[in-house]
Structure formats: structure tokens, C-alpha cells
Length: 388
Image (cartoon, rainbow, N blue to C red):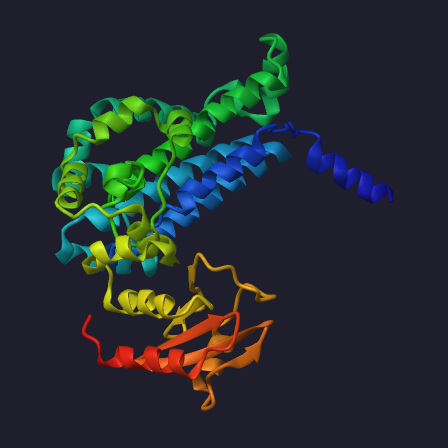
């Protein structure tokens, strides 16, 4: 028992523990970082660094509350370095990218953050334009990063466990001062990661614009929102970002796309088919993929049909017809079991009925509240003969 008291004293006597009252809000806001993942096929490595930066932010908050304030700031710096490595591995010339990625993976000699920045300033097609159009952001960021580095390099009496208590007493500093200071750098780091994420593609901003959103297709990227931008980035920096060639290129591309009605957009992005608006859907039928056109036509054949699963994908297209099913999700194994059944029409399951159809070499698992009639089944099968 005495040993435990001694160990507890030795391990905690020098720590300065704090409480971050807004911790839950920070964790919630980090979802915007998580959900901003890119769908760029040639930049999937970026998602790894986006997720890691988020975890480093979470670690930083926890370390600060536990009293390891220097480690908390170090974790913030690591998050900044992660976001720099992200753009470095995506923005360097394609002939060098794989070599640098392999060097990183195999823990070989790899440039430090300052070296990556210098290289990108000369060779990064996106980063050069970023630095030119967003000079004010990078100038401000440089000062914040330098301040964070003071904690990492232990410069100043307030950065040392040994002298911090004396320093606080002499300067009449309380825990509120340190909490506010930490939160300032925490919020900067979240904003820095969010901006650097935009060097991959501008979709988190593009998708905030409803006019542009209605011209996009289904994407894994989710938008930032205005509250997130105001708190962590700032409208002035977003306006500067909109002047970059990357943003303007994407904006021009989507403005050349046909604008979708809300009904069509819901089919493409939300998998929601309001079959009561069938005539409106038909006016922009050409914007749907062939399998989506087939799904719409299946819904049109019977108002008993509520959900349709395409080719074993466990998330359904659903209609404005309310389902009576008891469980509202399947796993992939369950879906594939139904797809393989030979006698696969009007199967009683989960308080509803399930039927499986093969149409143009694709499988459609159809849920319906009541049994389909022979005529309805035949009409669905005849979609095999229809051109889409």
C-alpha cells in the first residue's frame, strides 16, 4: 500500500491536470475531418493521414487533461506534420510519388516537414499555387507552428515541469490561462488539417454550395459546414482558397454538369426513390445509371415494394412506401444467402416478403410488404427486354 502511494506521488506530483469543458464538441467537430475523406483513386494514401491526424488531435486533448502538457503540444505538431506529409505524397511529380511513398513505408530516410515544404514550394503544382493565393494563411500558420515548437523544444520556464509552478505563481497565471492557450492551438491545428485536406480536392467546400451539390454524383466525401469553417478556418481563408486553380478547376467542371432536381439528387446520393414523383424522375432519367433506372422501374411496377438491394450491396435503395420489416439492416452474408436461393420469389422473412430478380446480368433483391402477384413478377422480369 505504501509503495502504491509512493509510486502515485512520484508519477503525478509534477503534473498539471486540466479539464477541457468543450471536449465533446471538439470530438464531434473532428467528424468533419474524418468525413472529408477523398475519393481520388490516385490519392487514397491521403485518407490514412487524414485519419491519423484526427487521432493525434484526440490524443492531444487526453494528454493535456492528464497533465502531460508538453506531450499534448507534441501531438499537435505531429498532426500538422501528418497533414504536410499528406500533400507531399500527393502533390510531388507522379514519377517520384511511388518512390517517396515506399521510402516512407519502409522507414527509410525521409524529409522533415521543413524540407517537404521547401520541396513543394519549388515542385508541387498545387502547393505553389496555394502559397501564392493563400499567403496570409501560411504566414499566420508559421507563427502558430513556431509557438507550438517552443513546447516541443522546451524553451521557456513555463514549458518545463521543473519550473512551471514557480513561473505560474510569479506571473499570477491560473489553469484557465493554460486551457484557453491550449484550445487556441488545438483549434488552429484542426483548421490547418482541414485546409491541407483541401489541397487534395475541394469537395468539402464544393459540396457546401447547393447549386454545385446538385450537379455532383454520389461521393464518399462529406462537406464541411459553416459553423466548422467559422470556428476553425475562417471565411477570409476560404475566400482565398476559392481563388486557387484547384478550386476553380473543380467549380468549372461541375458547373458544366446538368443540374439535378432534388428528386433525382436524392436517388443518386441518398438512394431514396420517391416513386410518387415518377413523371419528374423521367424528365431527367438520363442522369441515372442503368441499374438505377431499373430500380426506379421496379418500384413503379408495384406499390408493395419498399426497398431494393443491388448486386449484394447491403445498403438498399428505399422508396416513399413505408416498410413493415422488423429489422432495418442486413449484413453482406445475409444478402448473399438470399441471392443464391433457387426458389427466390415471395420468401417470407422479417415480417415482409423478399424476391430476387436477375435483370441484365445483375441481381436485385426486392423487399415488399405483401406477396407479389404472378403478373407483377412477370412485368419485372420483362425489364430484361427493355433498353435503358
